[in-house]
Length: 169
Image (cartoon, rainbow, N blue to C red; front, side):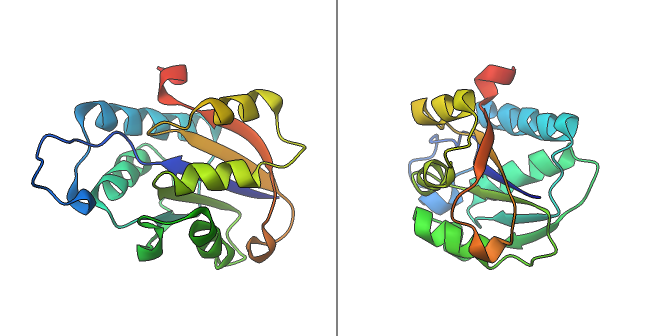
């Protein structure tokens, strides 16, 4: 069984209006939320073998803080195609994943990440998780999917959890 974790970057700072969007750092709230999500992944034993990370500063920082809480050190690929990506672009990156990876985490941006999560959530998805996903997919939110098969054929999966920092802290 494969496990896909879609993690939206944590809250970024808008303190410096001269910064390019790509270079925005995490806000204080984002720093705390990323650590919280990392601890939650570790507690639930949702340990990725591979992380696909948008190269934007806020996504790299989100991953750095999440990874620091994990007992494993997954391979990390900075995927330029994940920055400002549509759901189709993100899915294309996921489908290129090496078949040996049983658990993949993708750290990216909205609206593409949220759109993909909603698109992937098949009819066998958990109702409570689907309701949360449909309500809102805020910064540092995580959607967990499981499915049988290979990454290259991913089109639908069972959404098992939708975790938001406010629900955990």
